[in-house]
Image (cartoon, one colour):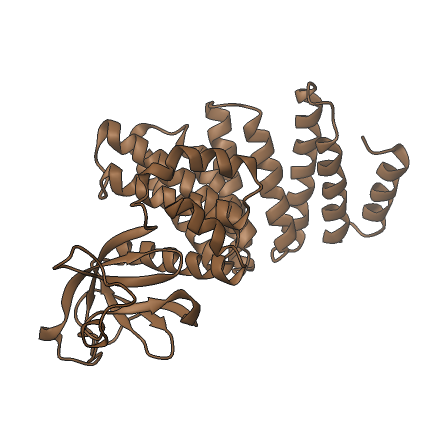
Length: 350
């Protein structure tokens, strides 16, 4: 709890200038910090402090509607109040309030991966309370927030892990009741990619290690991802559309490679040069960037541009499947750039 002297200091500051948003904001921060230090068994005292903090944040944002930090911390305070109420109607209303404040915070500062991650967590909590008919829409929105957070910070392991857990939950729901656009097995596999990546980035985190034990078998081992992309001939990247083919690709800890259909296995690195020219292979170490691309010169579909010294541009079946490819390739590159390739190799080949 904060002292009477601290209380008097903030009251005095507001009396001197009742239109000062910083005075209300700083007071709210002290109240919120005090709530964090309250005896865990004293829910009523903690909730009272958080409620007071929320009132101060509300006043701060009324006086200064562009105060990002106030909206962000206000959302955290509301979320803490919601957690104390379990899966009740009151908790649902509080989660909705927290989500609105995260939304406002991101509008004020779009380059905020932590706010996007927390927004996704709030949606994930809300999805556990709302009627079943509303759950999947909320989950899909949570997925988009986690994915946006990762796109802003590729090594944001908490958002990577959270995306894995929300996909796992969606897979569980889908296996029980159906209704999703993607099969449960595909969702489990997607979930495993993110959890494996989070573990590779932070191998000492016990939570990630435990989750990986649960999902590792859901990966297409010994690869991280297997799927289809439409590609031009390897020796003619600007070939007419009619020459592009939908081909199977594999991604592991070192490369993205086209599968040799005749052998039902990736082309070996020591294959004849003549034969290798007919297949697409991208070394992770050569990647500069990975992005979406939309161009009239490309065949229909969701464009995937892998920027290396020699391309390539590939086409995913749908924009949704493109998200999975983008994230997987970016994560493998990020793990490589952080010097953790050996950890990922141990996951998928060990």
